[in-house]
Structure formats: structure tokens, C-alpha cells
Figure 1 (spheres, each protein chain N blue to C red):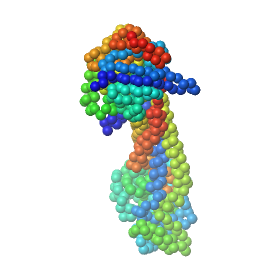
Figure 2: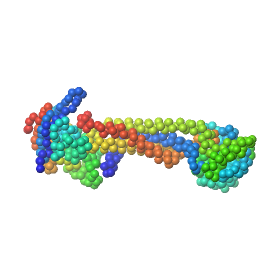
Figure 3: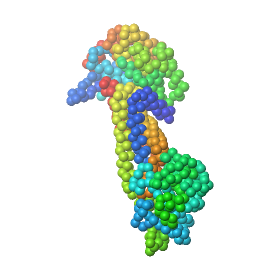
Figure 4: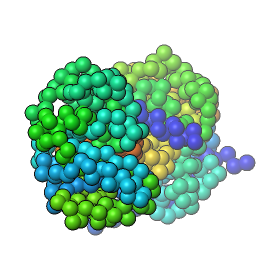
Amino acid sequence: MNDLMIQCRGVSKSYFKGKTEVTPLEALDLDVPRGEFLALMGPSGSGKTTLLNLLSGIDSPTAGSLVIAGEEIAKLSRRQLTAWRAEHVGYIFQLYHLVPVLTAFENVELPLLLSGLSKKERHERVRTALDLVGLGDRMNHAPTELSGGQEQRVAIARAIVADPPLLVADEPTGDLDREAATRILDLLRSLTEDHGKTIVMVTHDAKAAAAADRTLHLEKGQLLENA
Amino acid sequence: MTSILNLLRLSWLQLSRHRVRSLLTLLGVASGMFLFTSVETLQRSLAVATEATAADTTLVVFRENRFCPSTSRLPEHFADEIRRIDGVREVIPVQVVVNNCGTSLDVVAFRGVPTGLLTRYAPEIEIVAGSEAEWAKRDDGALLGEVFAQRRGLSPGDRFDAAGVTVTVSGVLRSPNPQDNNVAYVKLPFLQQASRTGLGVVTQFNVRVENSDDLTAVAAAIDERFESSQAPTDTKPEKAFFAESAAELVELIGFTRWLGVGAVVAVGALVANALLLVVRGRVKENAVLRTLGYPGRAIATLVVSEGGMLGVAGGVAGVALAAGFLHWQSFTMGAEGQTLSIQPDAFVVLSGIAMGLLLGVFASLWPAYQAMRQPIVHSLRN
């Protein structure tokens, strides 16, 4: 069995900004083993977020092969990609992006609403996810009643509640103070060590990157070095 | 199915937790549906009063070339001759006195009929308060149609006067014929004297025929019978008579259809605008849902559900307000002695609610299409 969660071969991404063609990623190769916590660093505009979007299946490469969890996702239709995303990827945003009118519990339940699970099963999973991130006692709080760190933990619970094998995180600690950031990084660390999740995290913060198993640097769409 | 219900619940949470926005939209929808229901009630009431059905068996015999009841004078003894014509089941001479012969929103119409003949002529009439015996006892007794009694707040024992006629309420009646519910039935001799018409003279004859297929033939036979008399007649089916006598009213109500169309367009535009704003305000939120694995059609379902819920809730509120208001006011439009009660029925109520739902769903289609077409990456970035 192939133990690679991610296998990129010659992946390029380009798009038009007005009349100018922009190529944030060019002929990129990348392998990420299952259960690895990978940090991606690089200056703004280096293609980090673009790569993350491709890995999470919310964007498609212009060229190249992108095999994730054994599936060539570059060849999937939009509908297939949506279904694949629901099953295989959890996305953690820098600014959490919780639905403001929903409670923590309801936010975490969102990925399960279309899963066909019974209400009882959904609620069990949501409680488990919230307990895992240490917010079992705040499940009925609205996002506005939570601190930034707590909101990000709710967002992580939302990302893991459907039990996807791959988590992608776009600067998950970028909007948090040091203490809250450390707690989030510990949480991500435990998700790889205790639950076998593969994590790809984009960050500008070297201290955050230090929590990962491996750090790659991206510059002008190219992976330059391994750290 | 579970997924659809979950999406509906999510839409409901969005609506119920954006209270001010939802209530303002709902208020707008309810106002539009209030107007729509009022117009539909007018249209429906008019349709019931003027559109012929296979069950119609009533003819109205009026004086030829006369329109206002005060100018139609026919000898009361014509009744005996009409009764002898083939196909006639029953005849009742009627003296009509109205407080206003023109078009009015609060017309009071007295119908004088011979004692004992009313229930024989119209056995479908039901006395819901007081009694027919009480009516028979008093010369100035009146049996009021229930819409009329409600509009004027009258009950048995009360006295009232209109058009120079003072009567005592003996009872309240209910009839499947809307005209009966809007008038005050009094004794014929009493009304002939009170209105100074004189005994032996009536305004019209109401004729029941044995079979609705005979309406035209019997009408022709009646008019032919009195063609050369001093008082030639003009006989028509009751609904055609109403449509002709109250032509101004029919025209006026016909025009209100455009108000209903305007209300529908306004409600549709309001819901569409509200949902477009919602969709624009939720660009990022919808992109997050797409990232979580929600297909575009699920996002569209959320938007359409919100539109449908706003439409139904606004429809129910607007229809309930209109039905309550019209029931409370018991408006009766009248023209040339004909009365039209403006009362919503079950059809109007159900069609109003269904229209609210349809408008809500239809108006949300474009916002839903926009929501499902928003590119995820671009939406997240902006």
C-alpha cells in the first residue's frame, strides 16, 4: 500500500488577472507521507495558499498530477470533487470563518448535515470533536461569546468532525496571541500523533513551523529547500 | 430526505436569528399579501355573484329599461301569471328599497316579501338568531342577512332605520346565496306603505325554475307574456341581472385586478432584493460551506428555502390580517340595489398562502443561482 497521502507531480496553476497571466505555482513536485505534519513557509505571493487550495480540492491545477489519498483529484468533475472534499479534507482558516448566527455546536455539526447520519450519530460526533478540542463546556456559545483561540478550536473541531484523513490549515495561528497559538499548535500536533491525521499548514511564523515534522519553503511557485 | 430537512432547519436558523432583517422583510411581504388577498376577495366575491353555474335556477323579472329599484314598478299580481308559466317552480314578489341607488360601500337594502313565502321560495335559508315566528308577529319585523347584521352590529330586538324605513330586528338569517346575507327582509305590505310605493306595486319578481336548462326559455316566456302590458318586463338569470345592474361596480372591481398584480410584483421584488442582499452578505459563509463539501445545489436550496419560508410566513400573516379585517368590517358594495359582500372564503385564504409560497420560491431563484455560482477561492479571498 502506498503510504503517501499527497503526491504532486508537475503541478502548475495559472490564471488571468485582467489581461496578465499569473502563475503562482509551476511544475511543482511534492510528496507528503500519511500522518505527517508539514509546514509550508514563504513570502506573500509565493503560492502557499494556492497550493493549499489545490490540496484541499477547492481549486484545480492547470497542469500536472495531484494524487491525494489514492485519488487523482485533478481529473474529478466539480461534483465529484465536492463529494471527495466532504470525505477527505478538513479546512482550517486563519480567520476561523464560523457562521456567526450558529452556536459552536451547530457550527461543528455543519459538515455532517449532508452526510446522511442520524441526529443521534451527528450529535455524538460533534460532542466528541468539541471534547477533543477542549470546548465540551462551551458548545452552546455563539462565536461572539468565544475568544479568538476558542473560535479557532471550534473551527478545528468542525474540520475533524467528519474524520477526514487530511487537514489543511491556512495560517491557523496568524490571528492569535502566543499562548492561544501554542495551544492550537499542540492540538494540531496531537491530531497527527494520536489520531494519524496528515496536516499541511501554511504559516509565516517560524515558531509555528517548528511544531511541524517538516518545513518546506515556497518562493515564486517553486519549492526551494527542505528544512 | 434527512439532508433536505437539515438544510430547511439551517435556513430556519438563519431567518430566526437575523430577527430584525427577517421581520422587516416579513412585514413587507405581509403588506403586499394583505393587498393581494383583499383584491382576490373582491374578485372572488364578484365571480361568485356574476359567473353562471349549472346549479343556477333563479331568474329576476325587472321592469324593462329600468335600472334603479326605485324606478322599476311592476303590478304584484303578475306573480300569479308567472307562476302559471311552464317550468316555473316558485315566484316571490319583491319590493326593494335602498338607501343609495348609486355605487356605495355601505348599502342598506330592504326586500319586502309576502309573509310565509320567503322560506317556501328559499328553503335553504337558515335562521341563526331570533325566529321566523317572531318576524311573523310584528308588522315592522325584519330578518337580517348575517353579513348585514354583523356590519351594523345588530341583533334581535334592536331597532334601526335607513332609507326612511324603521324596523325592529326579529332574526338573523344565513343563506348560501350571498345576496340574501346582505339585505333586510321585511313584510311586503309594510315596505310598500313605509316607502310610499303603494300597495300592489313591487320592484321585481324572483323566479325559481325547475331546471337550470330552462332558464332562457322561461325568461323568454315571461317577457313574451307581458310584452304588450302596461308594464313590460325584462327577465334575466339572477347573475346576469347582477352583472348588468351593477356594471359600474363590476368595472371598478375589474380594475382592482391590476392592484393585485402590482402587489404580487412588489412582494416578488422585495423578497428577491432581500435575498440578493443576503447572498451578497454571505459570500464568504457560502464559500466556507462549499469548502466543507456542500454542493452548489445545497447552497441554492438554502437560499430558496429562506425565500419560501419568508413567502409562506408573510403570506399567512397578510392573508390572516386581510381575512380578519374584511370579516370585522363586513364591507358590502352596492350599486343599483344589488349588493356584493366582500368576504374571503377558504379558496381565497388557501390561494393567498400558496401565492406567498410561490412568490417566495420564485423570487429566490435568481439569488440562489448567483449563490451557487460563486467561485470558492475568489469568495474566500475577498
